[in-house]
Each structure stands twice: as C-alpha cells, then as structure tokens.
Length: 204
Image (cartoon, rainbow, N blue to C red; front, side, top):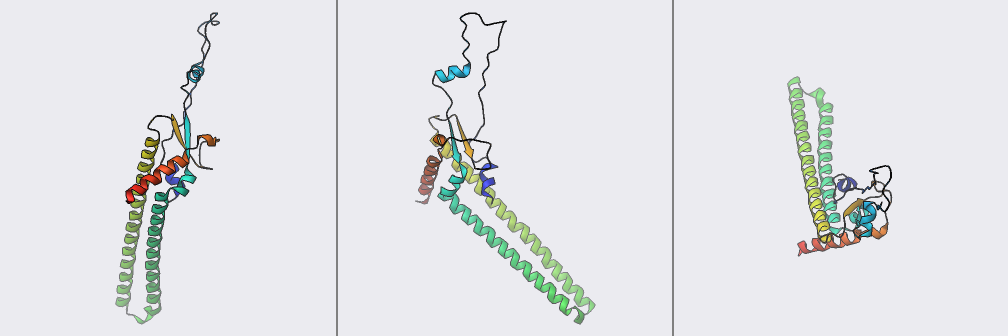
C-alpha cells in the first residue's frame, strides 16, 4: 500500500481549505460622513475571534506513529508472502509446461491432449487463486486504511475538544495544496504523542 496515497487520497485528517472574504459595497455615491468603513474581517480580528489554524505533517506522522509502522510492516509482509506464493506456483506451471514439450514426441495423441488439458486446468485454477489472494490483500489494506482514518479522526477530535482550532490541515512535502507553512502552527508532535499513547493502552 502506498502510504502517501493512504493519507492524502483518503483524507486521513479533518482538513478544509477556506477563506474569509469581506467587502464594503457602496450603497450610494459615497458613504455618509461618520459612517464606519471597517470590514467584517477587521471586526473579527479586533474582537479577538480570529480563526486559528494548525497542520499535521503526514511524513513525520508516518515515521513516528508506532501503530502505523507496525501494521504497515505486517501488510508488507503479507503482500510479499502472497507474491512469493504466486511466483512459486507460476514457476511450477512453467516447469510442467517445459517437461510436457520435451516428452511430447513420446506420447500418443490422446496422452498429449490429456496432459495439455490437465495443465490448462491447473493454470486456470492458479489464476483463480491469484485473483482471490490479491482480493484478500486489498480487503485487508482497505480495512487498515479505515482503521487509521478512525484513529486519527478521533485523535484530532480529542485534541481539539475545546474548539481551539478552526481548521486543521494535512501537509505532505510535494503532495499538498499548502504552498507555505509556519512551523509555529505544527501540531504533528502532539498528534503523534496522543496516537502512540492510545495505541499503548490497547496493548495492555
């Protein structure tokens, strides 16, 4: 499973991109004397209710979230084992095919047809097994992604229970719509700490 797609494509974090636009539209030729021209944005900032933003660095999260690393290693091992099993069966079929070619001249037509039919049946069975095995792996990967989504969403809700942040973005170098980030708003370490703490509880 490509981890970059895992977090970016499936939207692992609560993320939104929003902007607040304010404009003063003239109602007449000119505003009357003494009329305030303060925009709603300025009023919001002046009242101390400015929206607060934060972001989580996905690369750092993947590198330090213990549960993610353990489960990813398990999935990689299962995928490798499945591929090795498929490759082994394909080599076996190839060897049988070569052996059949080598002794084909010693077989009667009936024997040759029977051997060919048997090999074709084995090849068809192998293809069915291959598709079934990969389908199982894909299902397990989808479940893994769903589990991660729930864990991180719950972590974000817990961290932001006091509604301190208006928006929490996900960021990944080279694969993000965010062109600039101020590290003062980086809450990745807080998220990782909370996730690892929750994962440790489930092991007890």
